Image (cartoon, rainbow, N blue to C red; front, side):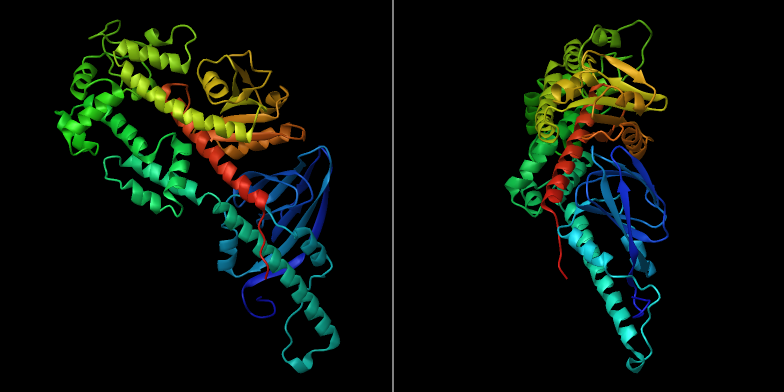
Length: 500
């Protein structure tokens, strides 16, 4: 330590205990020092400072790190009050300070034996003014006692910090396979025309190929090879509907060297030959149909004269009349375009993804009722069980259980999270448009649910709307979010400790 040995490090500054009553919110003022926070019960923490605005649930016997200058509000997550213990420490050394507080969003870690170490630490008085004497001869009895207390406190602080940071590392490493699979998926999506040795990619995951394929299927609903094929066919649809001059050009552009093999795969999967699709796509007038619905057919809206059709075209009125679900709308659009095989192909891929998402929902929520709400500038747009788009997708196909308050609704607007909490549901799924911050919605939800036990939430990015492309992206985001939470929860339940 700099204040004694001349080295960078940590210095124990003391402990503070805060009692948080049931259904109460307590504000923990900012400090110029860092703090390790340990909870004797379930707490919701809402902070603001170096890391922006954040929300974190701190479970029984879990610990997290609060940065200097961060102001934190604490609310009991259950019917009973509990104690919050804050271990304050100074960090000496700019590099160490930058590294320690650069850990990103708060991470709650279960540290076995933390209560014992905290009790021992509370009995070791901090000695902020202690400094190493100039010579051993100058060391008296009082100095020896003070030095012993100082090093005892430092040893306990370092043990706690080592255990906490090891837990953070373990949680971040809990899903390295998921991160690797997502990296592979993203690379395929960006450069589907490249050659991929799937067996080599699987071996590079650090686990058995079987385990890698399993995680990739959980994420996408498909094996890596089938996912790559689906990406290439989607891109081929767009190119054939565009300005490419030959099927051979398109085959090579999406990664197939053999034009005949590409044509066989295309017709087998999509029910139409590439040349026939190209001819049909260039004669269709699809003015007025949403880009998100057309995207899965490889088409884009091309405005034409008002009130006209060209070559058996289709307009939005043809596919949106009545209360068609997202699935029915895709099927009808496929029929009107003469591309039933393309629609069936996309719906088959969606069903595979939804099958894995339903399993994650059952594992994470079971039958717990939930409310889906889009966060908008003027409030919340709540989707009910009768909504043919997102309501049918999430409550029906994805397996979320609608709250009784919204089961019979199509959609409704609410002014605030307080109005949402008044509906009496403990689970909320927030859909965030670009530019909306997750922390704002989460903090408002926790602050207005009155400390009810079992209150939970999920937040996922949302492109807006309920067209086919938006539905596909939403299913993808929900799957990634629930897979990551499942991996993190597994690590937290196991706990992590280190002995020094």
